[in-house]
Length: 193
Figure 1 (cartoon, rainbow, N blue to C red):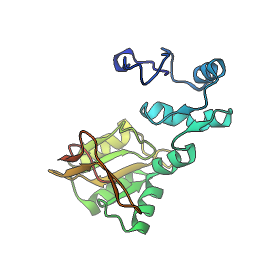
Figure 2 (figure 1 turned 90 degrees about the horizontal axis):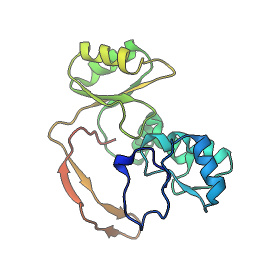
Figure 3 (figure 1 turned 45 degrees about the horizontal axis):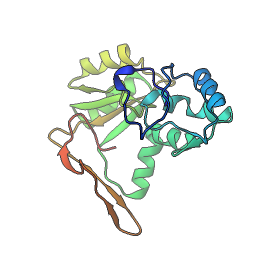
Figure 4 (figure 1 turned 120 degrees about the horizontal axis):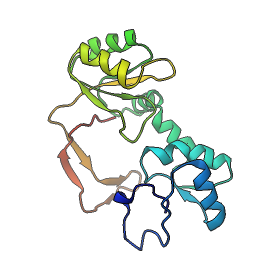
């Protein structure tokens, strides 16, 4: 296990038999990979940083176990993801992707406030904010993410008092997977996207 944050390290020996306190950079992970020679690397459990380096690790010969870098990229591109959900007939909140301040204001006026806004290519939740009016939107778009064609911003209707379902279900064979924590919970600062 490679972890640069000692506060989040588990002492569970079933998870890992070695722990490296190293930065999560391509260079450091490649050095450890070459030394340890593992079957592969799992990048899905470390937040946004390992997701960001997965493609480059794969290009350097690292076998990525679990979700592929291509699937990560697909999930991170929220506009592609939105279109896929529409194609599959899966309900989601009203939303849009803005590539300029003018587009952000236009989308916000169409959807209405409050909004959940975030950078487009982020899965880990970094940079999310609940926005209650145009002034807050302009400040966020300018100061937090510098919205532009290179840095699009997602805007979604914020669902107040919403519930989310946590649990598994395998479609096709209708298997239900139960684990501690399954059930309906207050969604907090989430949209269902």
